[in-house]
Image (tube, rainbow, N blue to C red; front, side, top):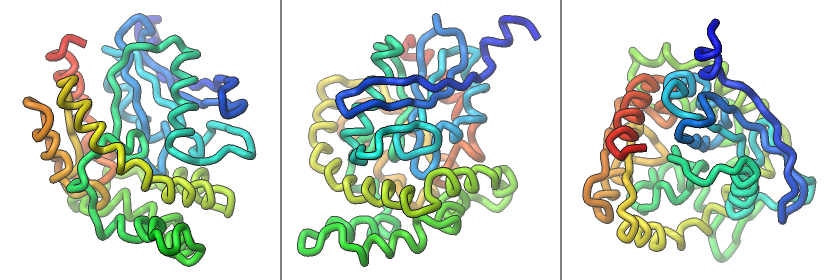
Length: 284
């Protein structure tokens, strides 16, 4: 294989960091020529950089691609006293980007990759979110009973498979690699320590909602180019949330694909094409 072709091949790295929150080691995937524009891929719950295993080869011919594991997922390591909040996840990833001297990038955000990426209340699939929101009850917050409810399904292999398969058309079900859900479950959800990390993040998600108005203001003032390509059958983040980007941005490109939560499993070729076309139109 030629050297030119080798630059497209994903490589795997572990970068040790000293952060304001203590030592950390961020595991990440890198592909593409480092001199090309960087595309940063931030994964969803309950996955990891493994979510992008099939997308990366489709875009790394044109872009330098980076995909980290967030703390609490797969191979990224933090100290035993790390507090699992989204602010702290942001601190770790921001320190990692600074260490890599990455200051300009296009970012793929969704779900845990950017809680404010779905910054409209209308985007929540409330049947899915209701048990999580029960943790936020001010009269009895973060109760063990509510945490146990979430353990019993959301943090089990059945709940993981639910996110991969729900509302995916029958003809596309065979495109879903069943190993992906197994990896997510065994590395990120199985066992008391993993579950406590995830439950702490579920509880902290409540703190993202007050920032939604700031995100709306950022959209209005920056007029940042935006592509939304997502599964219209996603039970967690429903189509109206994507449509509401139009409230604050004049020309968002919105594509609702016939897919579920993990749209890349069945529509990665279409998403890769849309990404490349979009980034070309915004001269990135």
